[in-house]
Image 1 (tube, rainbow, N blue to C red):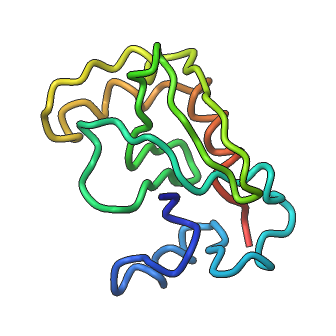
Image 2 (cartoon, one colour):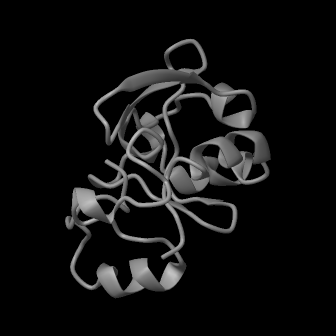
Image 3 (cartoon, rainbow, N blue to C red):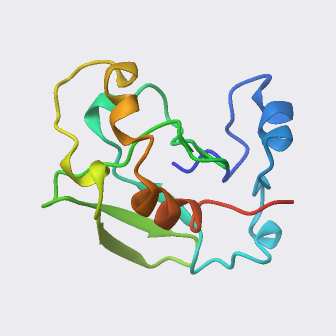
Length: 128
């Protein structure tokens, strides 16, 4: 689930979440500029990235967690308005192999992946 949606952030991380520069959407009426058709809530997460129930992508170019690519270089996402879609990754995220290792081992591979990062970050959140 999108880290920035809901009130399920781990204890102590709410202050951090708001200091990073993204709005935390605790209720549907909090979705303003982004719009519910543009804000993803659920996604397929890459198996090497799963470490908790939150999928975090932060402003400033950092993939905290990585989306899956096992649907022919694509993953499924469900949006706040109820629709879902399959998105095909164009850069390094699409070719990230499943190795069943810790994300720290694969993270550097995708940090320069601007095309995929730009697509997901535009649908992840907004500045407060």
